[in-house]
Amino acid sequence: MDLAFDLGWLETTMLVSVRLLAFLVVSPPFHVTAFPGTVKVALSLGIALAVGPAAAARSELVQGAMLVSGTGEIVGALVVEAFVGLALGFLVRLVFAAVQTAGGLIDLFGGFEVAAAFDPTSGTNGAQFSRFYSMAALALLFASDGHQLLIAGIVRSFDALPLAGGMDLAVLADLMTGGVADMMLAALQIAGPLIAVLFLTDVGLGLLTRVAPALNAFALGFPLKILVTLSLGSIAFLGLPAMISGLTDRATGLVGGGAW
Image 1 (cartoon, rainbow, N blue to C red):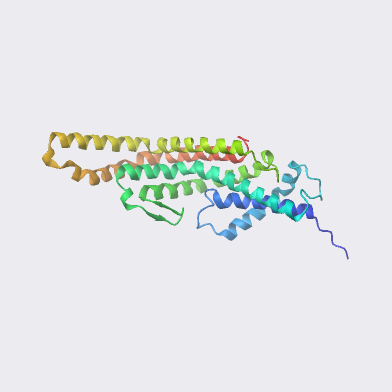
Image 2: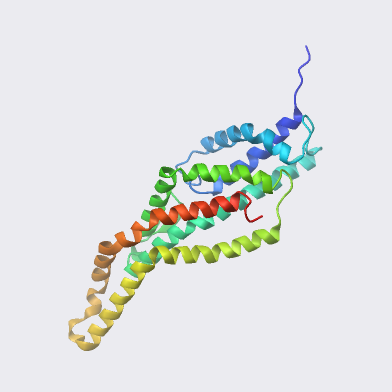
């Protein structure tokens, strides 16, 4: 009995799954250590089996034919797909880094930075508000089905970036440069009101010290700023859901090929 094995289908599935897996390893909310690696592999393979034929058609691959031939070319194509997935995942992570940066700014101006500790969820060091904002962003992503939008965006990336086609490094550099500026702007939009209040608190303490040096107002600076941060922290937090929605749309547009 003869068994026919479609090598073209196998190669397409491998290339698609490698790009998806590289994306899931880097991109929020799948990058957290609490998300098992076996689940990432299974998810990438499952999506690859579903979108593989469409991705092959977009790459003008003839049914049953191989996209590349030879061991060296296949390995090179896998490396290219891994790079594309990592680059797209990094762009998404750069977009959502605005939330953690906003929390870090609040920690810095509010005096919580002295209590910074290692965050096992994100794998970075951060104080209370930085970790709180990161966990809140992950929860909002899952609650608003933002993770499904990101998966849909990486699936649409095969339209703009066909299999084994690579990407324009100049465009990638422009997107990363603009992404850093957008990240800082978004962080200031999230934490801006509270930072302004904390700055006015410092100004008030400075004026009080000039008027009544004997009060030693700076000795009360840390507890007062912590009280103000905890009391008014809800102002910055209330704008987080709307900001997460905007960041999700931005990230989906990036991985979906809107900028390529």
